[in-house]
Image (spheres, one colour):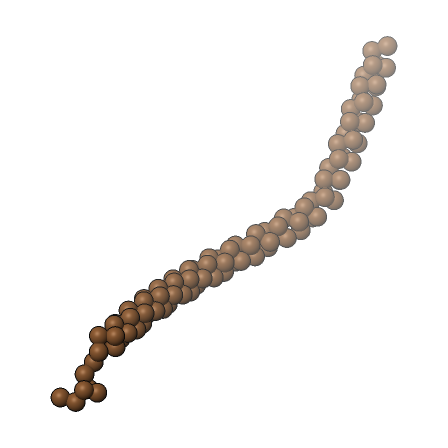
Length: 104
């Protein structure tokens, strides 16, 4: 046997350490990849949830806008109703005055 082809104990230990380091690095890289995939999955879920929230926000904003329009349309009616109530109160007061005058 050629003495140069014999692996020494030091070379064997060095090779084992390299394998061990390589194996550790492989595990670290696998863990990083798993973490990355998990984060991408979570990010995708959050993006979907955000799109639903955005759609809900848009619907609520539309409802608020519709409510504001309804309120704007009702304000003149409320003003007219208030004026009519005051007019009726004045009529009642006048009728009460006439009824009082008729008693005298």
